[in-house]
Image 1 (tube, rainbow, N blue to C red):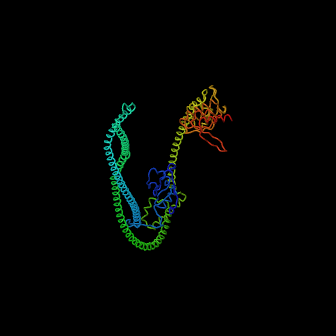
Image 2: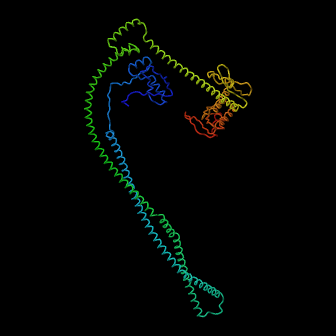
Image 3: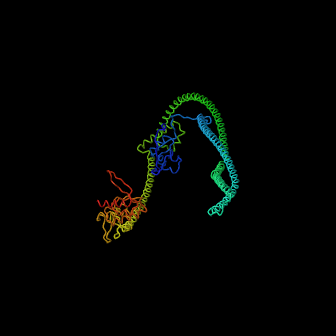
Amino acid sequence: AQRMMGEVNFFPINRLIAKPRKETIDSEGRPLLDSLQYQEIFDVVFRHVFGGTAIVRNMEAGNRIAKNEGFDCVTFDVSRRGAMTGGYLDVKRSRLELQSTVRKLLEQKQDIEEALENAIRKNNEKTAEVERLRMEADALEREVASLRNEHNIASEKKRYLSQQLQQSMKSREPKVAQCVTLKNRIREMQANKESLQRQLGTPLLSQISPEEQTMLQELQAEVKEKKVRLEEVTKQRAKLESVKHRLENQLSTNLLRKRESLQAKIQDISVDEKRNNLQAEMAELKSVNHRLSEIMTRLADLEEHLIEYEESQEKLTRELEDCQEQQKDLEAQVAEFSKQADLICTKQSAMQAKREESMKKIRELGSLPMESKTYESYSLKQLDKKLSEALEQLKKYENVNKKALDQYVQASSRKEELTKRMDEHKANLKSINDLVTVLDHRKYEAIQLTFKQVSKNFQSVFQKLVPGGYGNLVMRVSHDEDSEPGDRPNLPPIETFTGVGIKVSFTGTTETREMQQLSGGQKSLVALALIFAIQKCDPAPFYLFDEIDAALDAQHRKAVADMIHELSENAQFITTTFRAELLGTAEKYFGVRFRNKVSHIDVVTKEQAYDFVEDDQTHG
């Protein structure tokens, strides 16, 4: 950008006024637009830029056309200054192309190295993951073995306890039978004891014999021994039953539950699943290693190609140096040729100046007649003689304008062009006037339509706010005091509309009053009715009213509140008030307080809002 200093011009197409297309009269020139190719959408731009430019054969024709027809002329000639370059560039052997290829290969090498680093990092991560899974599998296998040992120990303990229980049950049966026998003996002895005690309570008819006394003592001793034996058997039975119950409880509460827990753990732990996961990780690791080897192979190939490109680059560098040496030699030859060319240009300039001087003399002679070809075969002496004779004859016509015909042709052409342009301007003026008429008509219709809608809405809104009254809007024009909508059949000019008037009646009588005849509260009510009417015609998203009910009485405040509530379905109304009538239909309440010289606003409830308004009215 610093080497290409200049300016940039932007042409907005929708704002350009195209120049009228001009045609050249002179046959040695033509408009530049005829030689340009462009899209039709840019016609106005090209006519604006190149509409007054013509291409001519030489400078003489350019000067003539520029002077006579007002064109900016350009020729096909080029400047003799500056250098001309050319030749052929082999793209396949371009050093820049090779440098770009080397840079791309280096970028690919860097990408591959980054991919290799990522693959190595992923390989390390996978290896660590596999090692971690292997350690987890070993830990799980150890845990399974430990659980199996605990299960075997619990099974052995359960089997031992079952055997003890069976032995206890086997030894219990004879002891139970023995207990039953002993209980029967005890009952028999108890019966004998009771019988003997009854006998002891009765008077003895005779003394017992010594044999009976001995037998009685033996029986008493045997009874005592049997009681002791019965107590021992009873204690042993209770002890065995306690052991039995303890073993049964231990079996049902601890061992069986532990066995079920061990079986659940064994079912939950799937060594095969871990082994399958380990095999999958090993397969993925193998895939990563395979991809890593492919990347290493590709990297090695790229390094070989890079070495080949570097060797080719060195070779091309040497060739480039040789070419530069040849270029220096050629530049020296070009400098020598330039010196010779300058000499030739000097001679050419002198010849050109001489040619221009001759052309000037020819132009001074004017237009050559058709008979000039007759004298092409004459010699120079004959031409001089004829020239002398012609000069003698021309002395008779010294006061005649020799360029009158050319000037007449130019003036006629200029007149035709101006007439054509005048016709175009008349057509443009007519189209503009037609457009202005259409726009005025549309503007009038829009004003009338908007006025009718607002007037209709104003009448309905005012009747709702003032049930016993009515009101309407009137259009004011400059030539008439008032104008009801639809009174004038013809469309008046837009400039005749001067404003809108309001006529209302609060009592329902035929007498209406204008705004300047109303009180402050009535003006506020009429203004609100107009706002609500406009809102129905052109709704806004929200409205902010600041104490609009300050000058209204209670009845009108209630009517305004009902109207706001009705219109709040399509818009949001934010009002500030010190009256209670507007609070009844509100949906949210905010209280504004002044504390420490700072205003604060807070959300309040409906009851707090009523208290706030009532307190303000009381203190006010």
